[in-house]
Length: 99
Figure 1 (cartoon, rainbow, N blue to C red):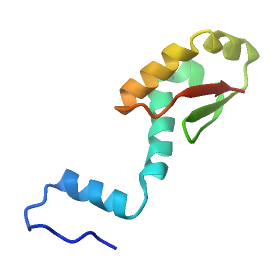
Figure 2 (tube, rainbow, N blue to C red; figure 1 turned 180 degrees about the vertical axis):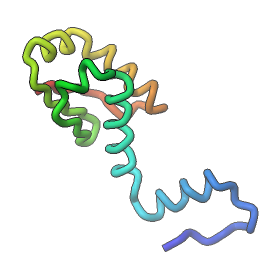
Figure 3 (spheres, rainbow, N blue to C red; figure 1 turned 90 degrees about the horizontal axis):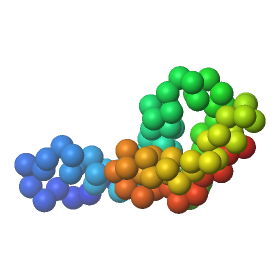
Figure 4 (tube, rainbow, N blue to C red; figure 1 turned 135 degrees about the vertical axis):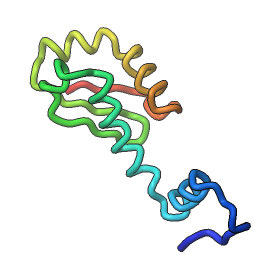
């Protein structure tokens, strides 16, 4: 179901946002964006030990295969959350759980 057109000159970005809202796709898009952002911010060193990145409501769950890395990252949780939200362009993540 597409929203009714106001005029024929709707900017593409606006049309996409209306489509996303009308079809309730934002949650799925956010989940993909969070995974991509984690991968780009953390780099290969951390990504090699990351087995999953899942967003549930406002909590980011990250599974790591290295307990040493998990401890190290847990010291900077608030900084990681701030960097992720800044990169995502809005406050999507409030908590970070490292497993």
